[in-house]
Structures are given as C-alpha cells and as structure tokens.
Image (cartoon, rainbow, N blue to C red; front, side):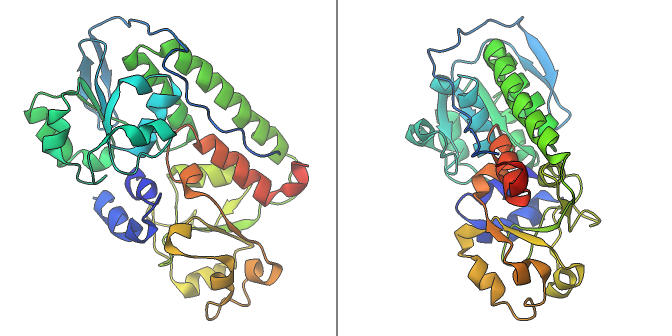
Length: 317
C-alpha cells in the first residue's frame, strides 16, 4: 500500500503501524515540477466521470480551481503537471517541490484535519487508498469531490499522472511528462538487460525488518533495476521478516530506505548474526533517499535510476 511508504519521508519508525493500518548511468535527472505559467490550462470535456483507484465513479463537474492533496505522491504529481498553483493545502509530509511547503498544512497524513480541509474550500481532493474507509466518507458527506490514486507499479504511476493532468486541465503537459519519464524507464531497461546477474536484494523499509513484497511498486522497481527481491515470495505486500529469514536468504545487496530511523551500513554490519551475510561481507549495503523510492509519484523514476546504478554500476559508467 502507498500509505506507510510515503510516511517514511521523515518518520520511518512509524512504518510498521502505518502498514498494518493499510493492509485491511548517470545521476538521475530529477523530475522538474512544471511552473504554473509553462503549459496552458486546457478545458477537458466536462462534466467528466472517471473511476478512481477505490473503484468509485467520480465526476469532475468543472475545472478545479482549488485543490487539496493529502498524500506526498499526489502533491508531486500536481506540481509536475503544472497544477501546483491551484494547490491550496497539503498533508504535512508534502515537502516537494519546495513550493509545496508554503501551502497550508492539514497535519497528519493518515488522519488530516478534516475541519481545516473543509475550510480550504477545495473543488477537488486527491487522496490515497488509506483514506478510503474514514476520510473519504467524511468528505463525501460534505459534498466534496475526492479522487483516490493508488498506483501499484511504475506503469500505474505514469497512468495516474495522465489522469491528474486530465482532471486539472494539464493533459498536454502530463502527456509530455509521461513521455519523458517513459524514455528514462526504457533507457534503464536497455542498460539492465546487459546485466550478467540479478543480485538478491533485501530492501529495508524499517529497522524492524519490514520490506516490500509482491504486488508493490517497490518490487516493480527492484525488478526493473535488475534485482531479485528477497521478499518476492512473501504472502503479503509488506511483510516483516525475521533476522533468521534474512540471514538464511543471504542477500547480496542490502538497500536501506530507513535513514530517518538512523540506520546506517555500520549499524547493519554490527547486527548480531549478520556478519556472514553476503552483502555485509562484500560491503554492498547502500543507503537510498526514501523520497525517491517510497512515494508512487514522478520521482519514482529517479529512484529506479538510482537503484539500477547502485546494483549495476558497471553498466552506467
């Protein structure tokens, strides 16, 4: 689920709780948010009815002039397609681009301040699947239009960027952005196709050994970056592995996406029983910016490039 992954921007230790709630080359070229003056705002055929990721038919009656985002990934999509000037409020973790931090904060990602949200008088709220059970019904009861975005893989992210562009009148800008992102994804694919091996990777989301399993966008990233996900055979999307399980599966590379919890390669090397793990013995313990891998937004392509380079540096010289 997207929920816990996005919270790890600053509070990776909260990941385990958030997951439990949700379960009911070259250096990467950053995704530059479009400026509000760049692409012209288009008027889609309105009213427009689309099915969101909660399988709800949502009707966009008019071009939204006041938009609220209650997830960092959605915020990044809005700014990336050039609709950031119409964003009036965001959750506290929406910190990219810098302009997002100037918007009114609605507090908690999991439970935003509903009264402040209503007071922002939005025409449209972009939410995620974690908001479906409690937040969405509260907003619907107040006759506020809510669209849920919850992509499960990289292709899904590109598709949702297109949807955001369509419902905000930035369809051309979104289409161009998706084209650029697709070109970069394809370039990674071509490079990684020459890899001699696909190393076993343990992607650590939390010091308690939560990781990403099958059916998640992180699993998709690892596969596209030329890795074998250590948790690909897990029975849940975000399993918590035991120390014994990780050691037995013997990862060749450990990716740390929990720097907010203070985890470092040195701390991993000092873990009891981990000295025989291949990644520890060879020094392949890599810290990564979780904002690039744990948010299903445009910068996920930056994360893909970063992972591919870390796993196969010989292919990106």
